[in-house]
Every structure is written in structure tokens, then in C-alpha cells.
Image (cartoon, rainbow, N blue to C red; front, side, top):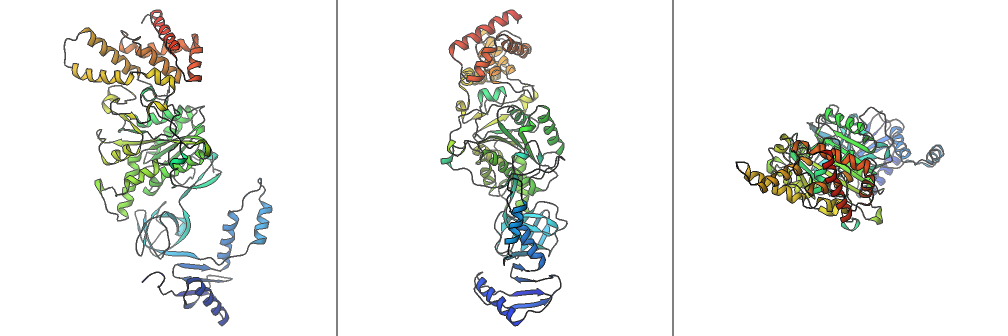
Length: 580
């Protein structure tokens, strides 16, 4: 039997029995509403003073004093402010307000447990809609079946019991957004958790929106400098790009993302760090690091820690992306870090299995690819006609024993515009950041570099690849010819040059000068252990004695042949003077 043919019955709760005239009015109203005669049973109840409550199927018409007050409250919440003076608008709204005959859909909880509630009686609930449970607990519809719906709960389910009432809100999941969130730590629902008081929101945005269409985008051709030598020179990231950071546990993935956030100081770029399934102590440490380096003022931290329910971990990256979209739509550039999406996929797998969805490969549900693609596709650089803002995404994925062929890593590699692969062996050998030059790639490439950086980087990646290959072939050789030794020394010097202390991003002129000098074989013959000292002294000399060269590189982003020759000549002269 279809919904249209379903026989409806009504129950009227009131203190006094309705008169014949009132019964006729109820009958006419219900026939107009549902297109059929609806018999109404009267039940005496003193719970609805000053009116009545009429229930028809899952629809509830509350015409009691409390029900009309709730309508008035919902109307007043939508009243806009007039330059901070809200009193006249409130008076006008109250004087002109008349209650409406509005139906509330109310269902009941069939089962509840493990953060999942099964609800019956809500025939018209939609996927992603927020439901309101007893005790103010909110949940989101995630599974729609023939006679019931599956709902994930955003907080503890202690107050939600079998048989308790649940109401539709008609709203999809959203988060408050605004400038007031800068410098703050919030949870997945936008509630502050840093103890610094409430946040005044400028608006409210749905956590899930469609990605910008192709026609509204423009090419990724503006650098987003991370300040990390090995990335900016060989695997550049542009504004609007999605670059995956992938590697085993404890190989410096988060450190790269935090360095990139610190390097946005003074560059008019807002940073959002989304922590998914991390320890709370780790998130606090990141907050303190950003504060120490004056990067927290332009940053927001969205935290769904390991102790939070799986639904909050599931919704966290979407909430962070909604906050980023608020700024992007205002024409600003945003860098967002998802740390990490492998834990996000695990949280989603837990929800899906509890909702009785069929498990697939590695027990993940069949739509786990869509889970991340619809998130990462929202990163874009908008066209100038609609503001020119951008979202640059740095998703992080943790591998097991360097296995990039696992399910989640391969999924996200295929969605993103390149990956930075961090290798455990390099990390433990002291090469930090431990970027594997062979497996890392940026599919945007030189388009996301300044002309100076592009020209300075030159053959760096090829030279390093040749060095790694030669190192493997010669590791068991006892006697090497002079040319091979020279190439090995040169490659070892380049590898040592790429080592960089944590939380110390390098400016463009530092990287360009160092690359030009190194690729001209200026460091050849310097012991590997002294390479970083030589570079530090060289940069200090350039910044004091040749400041014009540094400013010219930073301001113009250009590197002509004459300037390149000057840098090489000055570097060689300094080496002789310094005695290296």
C-alpha cells in the first residue's frame, strides 16, 4: 500500500472534549491537508493547557500555549539586527506575528546503542537531516530503509531510550562560521573547546555542499609556499591544489603541514587544521606551536579527538571545509590540513558497520571513495569573476610499513594532484624532512612555482635521482674512480642541503640562492657535516652585504642569467674567504 493510499487516523489530546462544530472544523482541515477523511479519536489530557495537540500519523499539530510560544521563539531567532539595535524589530515582529497551523513530524526510537539510533515513524526524513532526540541530543540521518531510518548521534546516548520521542528539524547538518573563529579551537559542531568563551558567528553553512563547477574555477598557477626546501623546489604546491602527505607513523607528516601553516605568516592566507582521531595532547601541542610562531592568529583548529564519538570524527573534515568555504567565498586564500583521512575512513567504517551496511574490501563500505572525493573536490581556486578565493587542501594519510597500495592510500592518491611520500628509512637515517624524491610528485609542477624558483631548481630532482641510483650500485664497491666519488660527494651534499630544522621555514630568497649555489657545484669538496653551516653563513652574508639581491628575488620572483652569475661568483668568493 502506497503512502497516498495509507489509511490515516488522528488522536486529539485536550482537557475538554471538542464540540460538534470543532469536530467538523478538524475534519475539513484534515481532508484538505491529506486528501481523505481522517477519523479523529479524542483523549482527555491536561498536558496541553490553553489548547490541544493533534497527532496524525507522524505529523503533530501542537496548538497549546507551549507550542505557540515555540513558534514565536523560532520566528524571533530569525530577526536580523539593525546596526545592533534589535528592539524595534522585535516589537514589530511580535505585533505582526500570528501563529500558523504547522505540523511537526515526531517519531520514536526503536533501538539505540553504540552511538546509533534506529527511528520509526518519520516517513519524510531526508538523508543528512538533523533530528532532535530527548535531552537535546542531536543526530543525523545516515540510512533510510523501508519502515525505519538509521541515525548517528553527535553526543552521548544516555538520555536516548527505546520509545522516546524524536523530532525532525528540516535542517541539514551545518556549522557556524565567521571571522570570530580565527585563533580558536572548536569541535566538529563549531562549539569552542579552548576555554576562551563563546564565538560570535557571522553565519551558518551546511557541512556538505557541492564542489565548485569547472566553469567557476581557474588554473592553479599561484604558488603557496610551504617554506620547506624539498617541497618548494621539487614538488611545488599551488593555491587551489590538493597535495597528499603520505607515510608511516612518526615520519614527520604533521610537521610538514604545521611548517606550511607557520610559513603563511604575513601572506594573507587563512589556515585550518582539522584533527581527526588524534590525541588531545597532540592537538594542544600543535596549538602551542602555532601560538609560539605567531601563526595562531590566522588559524582555526577543528578537533575531533580519539575520545570523541565516531559521528563527530566523521563530520569534522566537512565542518572544517565549510569554514574554509566561508573565507574562500569572500575572496580569501585558505590552507586546510586534514590530519588524517585514514582515521576518518576508520570512523566511517565503524558507523557503516553499525548501520548494517555491507562491508567490502578491508571491511570498508562501498562508498568510501565517495566519502573522500566529495570532500577533496571542494578544494579549488575560484575565477576572478566570483572573487578569486581558493582552498588548498593537504590531506594526510598514514600507511602501514610503507604500503601505498592499500585501499585508502590508493583511493586518495587517485583523487589528489600529487603526493609527498615520507620514507621511514630516510627519517631514521637523519634525513628530515624524509621526502622520497622518487615516489613524490606534484601534478601541477612548475606552474605552481615562481620563475626564480623554477629556474633555480633546474636539474635538482634529476641529480638526486642519479645519486640515489648510484649509491645503491656502489654501496658494496671498494674501489671507485674519481668521477664516481665526485658524483657521490655532490649528491650527498645535495641531500644534506635538503635537511631542515622543524618549524623554521625558509624564505624564497634563501631557497633560490642556495639552489643556484649548490647546483653550480660550489659546495663540492666541503665535508658533508659542514654543508649546513656553510649554507647558513652564506645566507647570512647575502642578507647583510647583498640585501638588494634578496629583496629583488622576493619582490619580483624573477632570476635572470646575470643575477644567477652574480650569486655563483659571490658564493665562490665567500667560500674562499670563509676557508671552507
